Image (tube, rainbow, N blue to C red):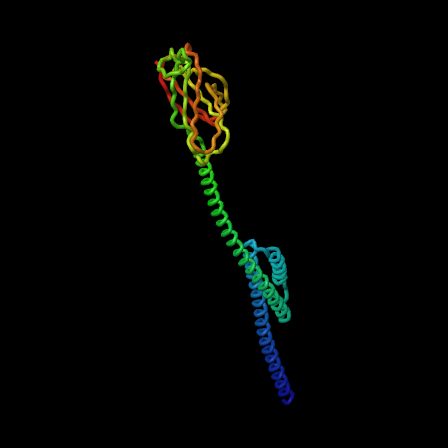
Length: 292
C-alpha cells in the first residue's frame, strides 16, 4: 500500500514538472516569435527608409545638379547598404542597432549634401535670373543701337542730300555774230553762232568748299550733243559728252557762272533744245530753249 502511494506521488510530481516545462516552453516560444516579428518589422522599416533616401537622391540627380557626381556616389553606397539588409538571413538587436546607427549617419550626410545642393540651386537660379536680365538689357541696348544706327544712316543720307549743290536760274540766250563782231540775241537756228548760258550755284553751308567742275551739255531736239568738246565719266559710271567745261571755285556762297559757247550755225536745227548742268559728276539742273 505504501509503495502504491509513493508511486502516485512521484507520478504527480513528474506530471507537474512536465506541465511547468511545457508552460515555460510555450511562453518562451511566444516571446521568441514576438522578438522575430519585431526584428523582421525593423528590417522592413530599414529597407523602406533606405528606399526613400534613394528616391530623394534620384530626384536630386535628375535635376542636373552641380553636385550630381557626389549625389551619385552617395546613392551607390546606400544601394549597397540596402541590398546587404535585404540579403540578411539572421537578425538580432545588435545588428538592427548597428544598421540604425548607419542610417542615422547616412541621413546626416545626405542632409549636408541636400543643403549644399539647395544652396547651389538658389545660386544658379540667381545667376540664371541675372543672365536673363543681362540678356534682356543687352537686347534692349542692341535694339536702341540699331535704331540709332538707322537714324544716323538716315541723317547722313539727309546731310549728303542737303550737301549737294543746287543750280538755279538757268538761262540760255542764242546769239548771232554781226559784221562788226558784236553778238546780239536771236531766236533763229540758222543765225545762231553762239549760246550764252548762265546759271547760279546756290549758297549751301553743308557743301564742301573748293574747285568744282561745271559741265554743260546742250542737246538738240534729236538728242544729239551740240558742239561736243570732251567726254567725262559721271559718278554713276556713265560716260557723257559735254559741250563746255568750266572750273568754279566754290566758297559755300551764291556764285554766278556764265559760259559763252561758240557753235556752227550750219549744224543748229529748229526745235526745243535741252541744257543739262553737271556738278561733281551729277546732274543738278536742266532747262530748255527753242530755236525757230
